[in-house]
Image (cartoon, rainbow, N blue to C red; front, side):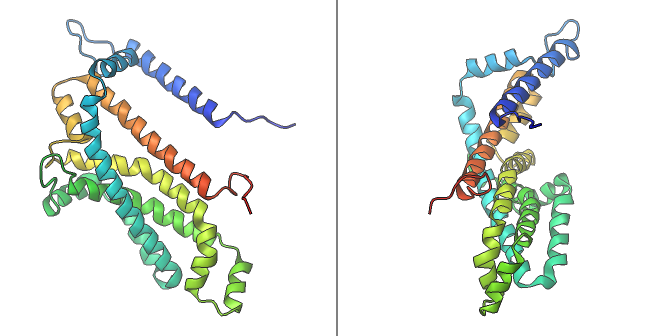
Length: 269
């Protein structure tokens, strides 16, 4: 008996509807405003959507522009370094243990402590409206581990017979890396890069929480929390989730276009 799977888009719609329903139920039951006040830490989805509609997207564009820039720069630096390190392991297998331990340590480091050190060493934004160096660093740190592990697993998935053919014909480890391992590792690398998109965005936001910047999602959330403006806090949170999902989807589409054989599509000759 063949089981029919739910299409990906339909599963996404059902999941989003379920989250919105749970959000509304909790806001209407558990998080009711205390007697004599209208403040609630969890406003209903209708209040949040109405706030975004009333404000318009213009006030949020400048806020997200800086954070997205920080996330993109950190994403590029962190993933480039991770891929370089993973490729070096194939050329020098002796350093694999050290590289893996460094990647694990980078993943386990407490963000608050690292961010505090980074804000002292690197500082924040040099001028008003510019990206924060600390936010860029934390965005790069957030993607390093997943990309290193994904790339190493992908490189190890290479077909042994193909590697033997390259070696028999006098090919070096560098030739094996370019001709065999890189092609075999593309799906795993692209999956790691896709997962790294929301991680980089979150890292940039956490970097802005360290201060030394005047614009961005993190500093905006701090201001709104201080004003007890829960509706706009949730509005920024919702828009952040949309930005991360869009980036995740874009890299996913790119991965399907670059590796069509993974999704079962025919490759043109």
